[in-house]
Image 1 (cartoon, rainbow, N blue to C red):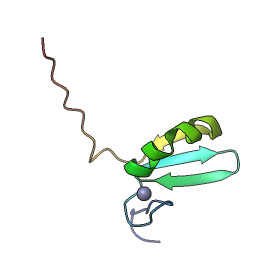
Image 2 (cartoon, rainbow, N blue to C red):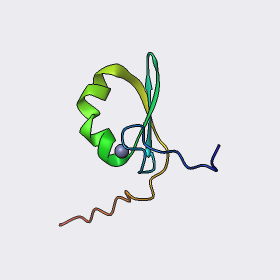
Image 3 (cartoon, rainbow, N blue to C red):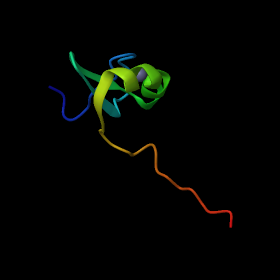
Image 4 (cartoon, rainbow, N blue to C red):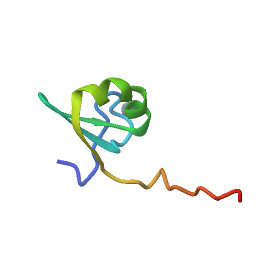
Length: 64
Ligand SMILES: [Zn+2]
């Protein structure tokens, strides 16, 4: 096992940011592939776990 680095199951080159739990098993996805498959995953998964949020820091500024 590598130390904490989990590759995306779809591309294997990006670090997985999401662990998607399905009835039949688990899948790891990078942000790109999670978003790409999100509609299908929403129907099949019962839980989605965010592994880390380094790349997606919410920096929304209110325009008001
Ligand atoms: Zn990927």
